[in-house]
Length: 239
Figure 1 (cartoon, rainbow, N blue to C red):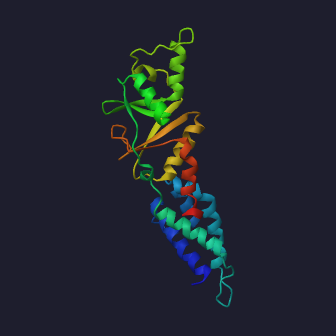
Figure 2: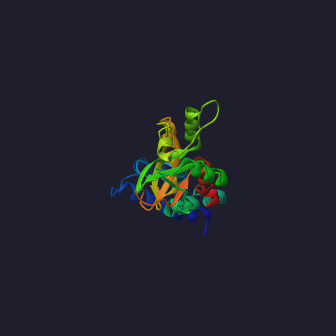
Figure 3: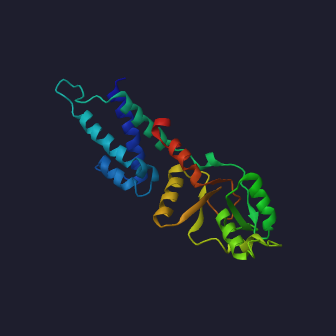
C-alpha cells in the first residue's frame, strides 16, 4: 500500500469521527466544516485542530490526480505516521482512569495534628476533605500555612484539638478542585487546567470518581505536576 493510500485510509477514519462528534448527516459538510462543528464538543478536536486542518489541505492535494491517474502529491512516511496516530488516539483516547490510585482523603472532623503527620510522612500537598460522603473542599499546604500564621502567638503555633474543618476556612476562593469521571479522556482533563487558569483560579487538583460525582469515592487524583505526563500521553508521536 502506498503512502497516499495509507494516508487516505486514516483520513477517512478521522472524517467519520468528526461526523459522529458533529452529529452531522449533511453529506455536503466539508472536512473543515466538520472540524468547526466537532470542536464545540470535543476537547480532542480542539487540541488537534491545527494538525487536522493541515492534513485536510494535504488530502486536497493528494486527491487532485494527474491525467495518468497518479496522485499529484505523495505524503512523507512521517506524515502518514502522524495521521494514523491521530486517527488511533481519536478513536481510543487515553482515559482519566489511567491515573487511578489510592487517594489520601480526610474527614472534616479529623485532627490537624494527625493530618500533619501524614503530610510529613508522605509529602501530600492536596488533600480532599469530606463530611461523610459530601465533598467539602481541598486542603492544601498553603491553606495550612495561612492557618498556622493566623493562630501563631509569639511565633509558636498552638494546634490543640484543631479540626480540619477550621483549616478549610483558610482556603482561598481561587484554590479549587474539579471532578472528572474515570471514562473521561485526558483531553478533557487538560482543558480543565487551562480553563481555570484563564479565570485566574488555581486548580489544585482534579479528583477522579466513577462518574465525576463529588459524592462518589475518589479513585484517583491529578495535579498540575501531572500535566507533563498528560501532554506526553496525548502526543500522537508517542501513541
